[in-house]
Amino acid sequence: GIQVEQSPPDLILQEGANSTLRCNFSDSVNNLQWFHQNPWGQLINLFYIPSGTKQNGRLSATTVATERYSLLYISSSQTTDSGVYFCAVETSGSRLTFGEGTQLTVNP
Amino acid sequence: DTGVSQDPRHKITKRGQNVTFRCDPISEHNRLYWYRQTLGQGPEFLTYFQNEAQLEKSRLLSDRFSAERPKGSFSTLEIQRTEQGDSAMYLCASSLDSEQYFGPGTRLTVT
Image 1 (cartoon, helix red, strand yellow):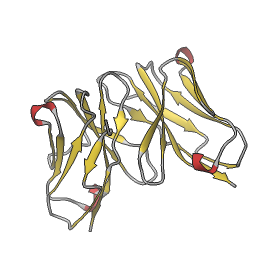
Image 2: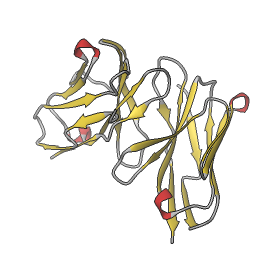
Image 3: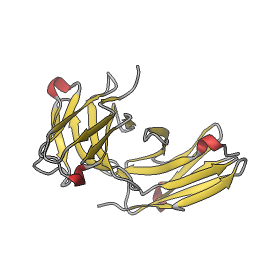
Image 4: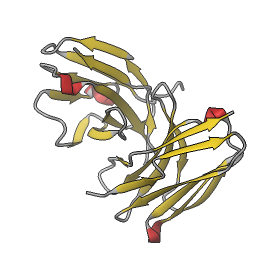
């Protein structure tokens, strides 16, 4: 099956710093989503981005489907950005395959 | 619309007991998914429904697991004869097209 690799596995930032999270995948995909998992376990949708670039406030994402990677940018980070960020891809049959996540800690 | 809901949010059970979880998808969504997440890992796919038809099942879904979606609305996931290895967060998601939206999950602890 498809492999999804996220980097870095852990990231510690000071409030106000910018960061880039990366997601590499091993095959062509129909769908790519970025999620933020809060401390209670809820997965929050950030982006549905099988290709191209999208922005939502301080967050933006870019997927280069031909090169099989996606990037999530967080600017001016806040403590509330802390949590685990997941990339998930769908190839066929609608199942999402998740990476192992990036644990982000933003210190005040 | 209030999003995907799951019940219960937490369940503690003794090994060997049966448990059942419920998922109510976003009302207009025809697709429903179950995933399982263990500590430190990303969610793993279990099964998928389109309307009332169960179209795909993962190898993770052993014979002790059964899922239903009567009338294409809510879904239930039953685990029979629970084992300690079943302890995990069970997540439900729904979609109308490709973008999946997740519920808050049911955290199962098997003692």
